[in-house]
Amino acid sequence: MKRKVILIFTVIFFCANTGIYAQLGKFKEDVEAAESKSESKKEDKDEKEATKSSSSDSSSSSGMFELFFSLWFLTNGGVTYGEYPHHSNKFVYMGLPETYNISAQGTMQKKKNHWFSTEIQGFYMNNLGYGPWASFQGSIFRFFGPYLEAAMVMDGEDYLGIFRLGGTLSLLQTNPFSLSVYGEWLVWRGIMERSGGAFGLKMRSYLIKYIVLDARLGIQIFEYFYINEMEFKIGVMLNRWEISAGWRFWNMYTDGNDLVERYNGPFVGVGVYF
Image (tube, rainbow, N blue to C red; front, side, top):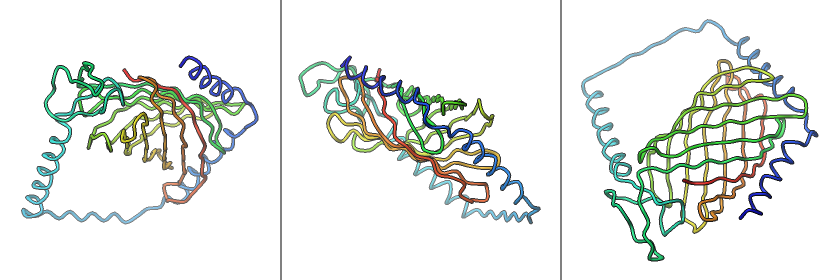
């Protein structure tokens, strides 16, 4: 296990110290071009607000909300967790909490109302740069929890610090498929300073033994531009440690939906559940 962790950090160190890509300046130009194009298209628009309300619409919306809330509570209110994915047959358990559960190996496993994981990645994205990306996420109590990220993008000359502070709310939790929404306050510091928000969906699966599948589909919103983000990751569990690899995609658009640039690239990481 120690050799695998050392190998991962060697790859991360190599990524963070290879000065062959000088692309942050180009990324800054993309951002400024998106902002300039968006500002030039800002014209006075006719504001049309059609607000229609009726008692039938109101009652229908109320009924749909009650149905959604009932289904959401049934699938999340009684969830408990194992020690870490694939510690026994399951990671997500349904039903009221029990003090202990007998695992498939005949050992005593404590169920929990919470779980957390932290991870460090080494990444590269074309037209952007490379560096380390750290994250902390989990569930404080069954269906909501923190989602914190910090990254340092470098190109051998400049740097861009990315800080994302927020949380997640689970919509569905099962071992084959789990779905949650996330929201984060987003800050850039370094070669340029920007702030905004990030929102989207996170999907996870523990269907295949020793394997964790993870995906993110969302958007980063700034004042004059936005970035669509996608991320796909596969992890292998070694006890409570996860060795992972994946691919990250960013597409930048003006607020008028004009494509500015595409960025994508691989990452490798090591994480731990607790």
